[in-house]
Image (cartoon, rainbow, N blue to C red; front, side, top):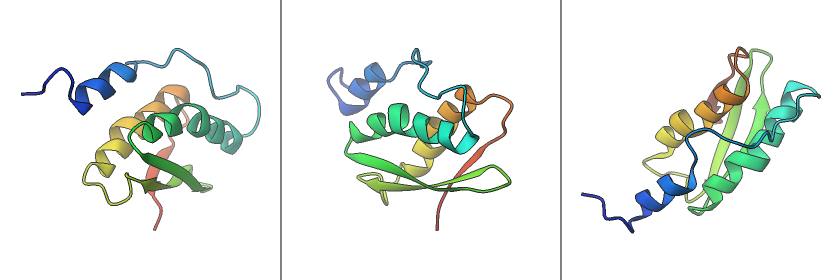
Length: 105
């Protein structure tokens, strides 16, 4: 049972179901727009729990390689954060682009 004041409950309250702000500019190349989304929306959410994210590269096949840092580095929930957090937000902001997010080596 999750207590109302637990960390998970607090995080759920802070993260809106759908973003209301438009952080990724509509102009510019894809890499610049992805960088803006990570910098303005994704990174602040991870930093609330002591983590961070760094873009390593965007491949020609639209694979966004990222590095999770801080509390996210080595965390058992890192794959969940990547798939249901980062990937989901990118899919919402860039529908039809088919960008795959994966951890860099």
